[in-house]
Image (cartoon, rainbow, N blue to C red; front, side, top):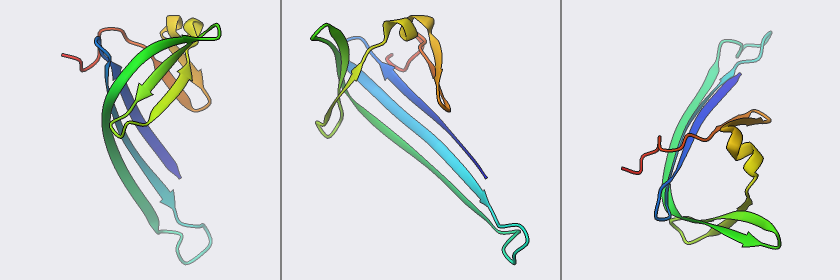
Length: 104
């Protein structure tokens, strides 16, 4: 079994962001059974955009995201990780690459 995905979030000057996701998976059949050679496959993608800004609340900076459906989410900002430009959390690798996005 395997799965992979690639997600980009581009934070542009002026408060606009662009989100894109591409993912796929493969599931093998069960060994020792009649379906051992069967496989299931899948793939999907998603795109979204919205507004972002940084807020300061009770001594902590937060990233506010407002998506295309006007849903708001808040994420605490860890400046130590952000300044390292690359970090890993579980199976996810994050990369911060200033000036490399699709903000054109």
